[in-house]
Image (tube, rainbow, N blue to C red; front, side, top):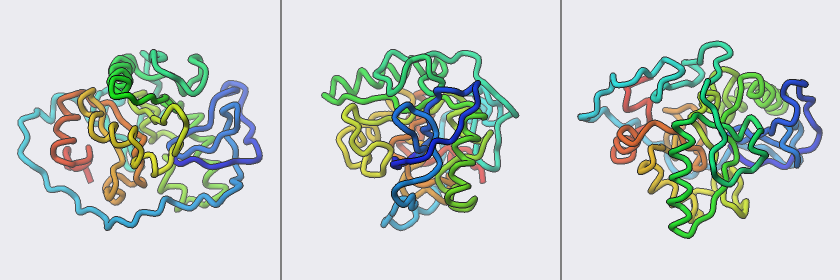
Length: 259
């Protein structure tokens, strides 16, 4: 979520010491810890494009019951404010992918589910072949860490505004271990909308599906997903569903007809 220059450290619990503060739009200090007060205005991303109308369900040959959309371990699980994960859910097969990492490999946010890790490694290799160098900015995030992030935003911006760009504890895709925030190696447009205009952002939008990922919060679908446009946030769903979503222009909510 978007880059914000921060002052004032939020005290992290001992069990979360050293964890980076980087939710889709998480403010962090140089050591990756959450902070609470923004030096610049944390206004929501400006989007001049008119809201896109929800895409009507289309005929698909993909078996929509192949995986559950409610079971937290499922490849197709959908979580949002209306569909929280099981309390305290933690994936049991997290690992650090062999890609360029923003933080130490042992950091919680540099972990991702094993199946997603393998796919992410192939995605990074594909980007390298295209002459693009990227970095994993954030992947898995525990419910406790997400609570720190979200509460910090609420204290600063209020609940209504925070909800447009930060997931409430227990409802973050990052907690599933299937989501990843990607940034350029040179840190340009770090978790900012302008990432979508960079070569890295354009490549990700055009090619992520080939590796089983979808850009989860696309432009113009804020009313559908509940979150602002995030060209850097990708979600692993497998190549079959990723291709369906890419070709149809649908979000997961639209494809599975979830209100």
